Image (cartoon, rainbow, N blue to C red; front, side, top):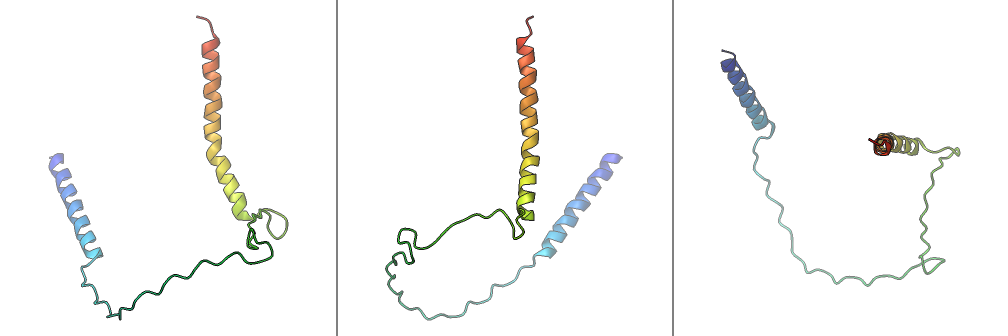
Length: 110
């Protein structure tokens, strides 16, 4: 008796899901793309050399500033560091405890 009801519920769920998925994305004809005039491509421009004060870097500098405007780290850096610590801490704890257990077991003469 319960098997029959479970089958009916499963069929109802499958049919309902199929109807919902079918209604979510109705088929539509693709619009016709506008007609474009085809022109010949232009030749590529030669690369330009570095410009600026220093010819080796081109005047470009790359820097990473951790401190915010008031001298404290920004909230995004703090959150990034907190998530890093929270994700690495369990692995370190497991490594340390497993090493200790293995060390104790291996050192006991039997």
